[in-house]
Length: 530
Image (cartoon, rainbow, N blue to C red; front, side, top):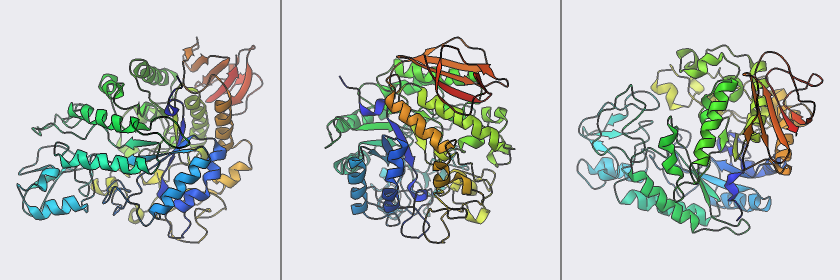
């Protein structure tokens, strides 16, 4: 039996607002994405994941949704979306859409009706209102409750503009079944579920032990029945040109793999993101432990966990790997404020090696737009240009996520770097000095990050050992990662401070940085023929 497509797919995350702008309004759009599909095809990806593109006031980058079954006019029209589906299908690229079921926008018609209807009304029962708040805190900083004009409080695990749904109310699951079918009917190959484990809250809304990692709004038992119903919907669909059922991947930031395993039951979600590498310092011991945890979960469930090095919610990988790695082990004010010293040359070297690691591991992998260019975090955004609610809810104590969402640099030496043809003010400012990081500049440089990704993805597609399957760790020193995959593939990474010898019997397919004869330099990875 052929494995489902998602088991070994390489998926490219498109943050549409920052990808490519064709109408000159400073924000990306569907026509911009369509104009760059050849870039994605030549990169070698199998699918794209689109962050939310639905009508939204953009208080949280589109994760505050007014209408789940339409396209925000800043990005185009439904016809533009359908043309994107047609174009990607012709290139053999699938499309995954982002479903945001935990909350909506405070401008959603349901929530506006709830505010007008008042306490005790059926309209309020679609959300979580109470007469007094508990001690829950917003993930963006500050309390998770805001008081309505009539004195009741409503729950929002994120921004006050994002009220949480009450998933125990009949209308909510019915609406989302309609949303799923709406987009599946339009040809998407899968869904990404935002904050997949927070939908149901403990019915008693108890105070939280703020010192505990277990929260009363995580992993409530009812969520599993919900995902079983969604899986039945997904499995009922095929797709012209793409055989088999549609996929789904859940976003769950778990600390205990046992809490994640139920989601990967045969009749629930096919995949969860493996987000461990986002939070793992650059040491062989800690990386190996994170990898083994993901392998264990895959082996002890019916699903799988794609490897992730970056996304729209976390500091760019070249910055994370270029700071003192002790800072990655704990959240510090220095890191949250963006003031930790960064060695971008070192971070870029490590990011290149990390890319070869992630793409050599068994299973699927996700690439966040711009990571294939080695883009750094833009840390010096003026306060008046910042958009992330985290910045405002913490009074600037946390700079937030804007710095990893900067519009893509495609060509040229000054902003907007080909993101749009017009000299307009982009929705987030681009820094100066990105001329050598543009896609055009890197395509012309055989040693660039972009060409490393292109070579790795080409080899991954061609080599029978890569993609889904097994791996075997091989004996290595404490500063090395080494494994083999059958048939005939070997991986070796040097995370130490001195060069190491490459086995004499191995031929080198690809290395993340130039070799020193038969020596692998520090912070370098190599793909080997065994």
